[in-house]
Image (cartoon, rainbow, N blue to C red; front, top):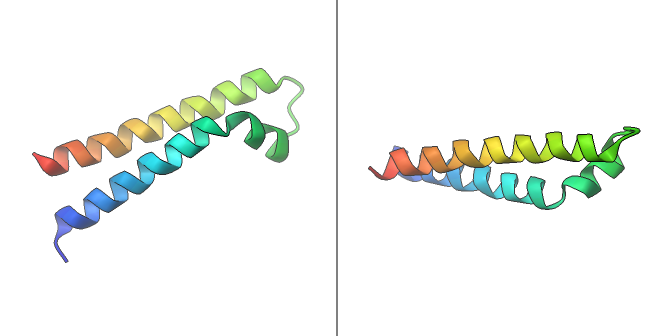
Length: 65
């Protein structure tokens, strides 16, 4: 298999996981963590999702050029 195809799939899956993480951040914080303040936990989960999304998009972008 070509390395470009593999990197494109990895970047797409990473970006997909990040979007799901951002979209379901409040539900994830409620189920997994017992924070007193859910807003700060949600902010952290969304920030991690945003970071993962940018990494996935950078992989795809530099793979295509």
